[in-house]
Length: 329
Image 1 (tube, rainbow, N blue to C red):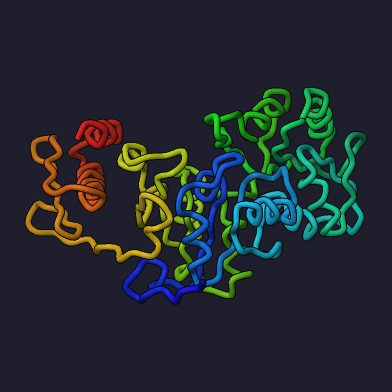
Image 2 (image 1 turned 45 degrees about the vertical axis):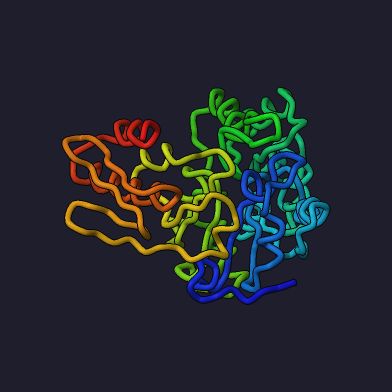
């Protein structure tokens, strides 16, 4: 059943949602608790934006539907499709592009009128994640880049969340090619703005009215900040509260929620009372380099983040100290 969110909830205060998948909705083959029910309860439009370039939007849509998410294929935006669209805007129709990665990379190139190849002298190399990428594939990419092909990477995520823990992501594969060439790739996926700009356009919403939900600070949240979207860090994936406390300004989330149920709940505004940073009934402050917290639960964590970020920005703590303070609080 679709429920119109109350305007005092996080979702109700915004016009649309861009949602990461791995670590937010699913972890490998398993759905994350509460995620499906919340997504199906939202009435604001949603685009699922994933840096995982290995699958087609149709395959991603089917994977989500298999877990019970009500979603159409055109609500899925992969980093390979975003990158293919960028290349199509620069290359002549039918140009050959070396596809490195899963089926999602080749399918995206075909979808925009380019010709995927696996060897030769292409105009460009599009490199995305694929579980069956071989050393030969990486070598061919390096040969093509050295020969002058433009090099575009869908993303440089170092790891990929799975039900058994983090596995090497596309960043590890890109690093292997980079070790053999003298140039850096152009990266299209998160945290770079093209992915989120395309999502906002598809949603018909201004970026500042779109919530960008993700579990990774260096991709989901940094991409949101770079695009002018409020970023929501959900604590079901890669990064936790200590990571957020130590994050530089460009990776700090606007909101922090335990799981997607937080989208359907009110979010307490930030307030100050003297040296205290307040969220709801909880508060935190830094005194003589020490974090003091009053209250319990996630509001106390949110207040602690406010206090630690203020201390870092004011030169009272460094990022490492802030992360340690959150860990040991």
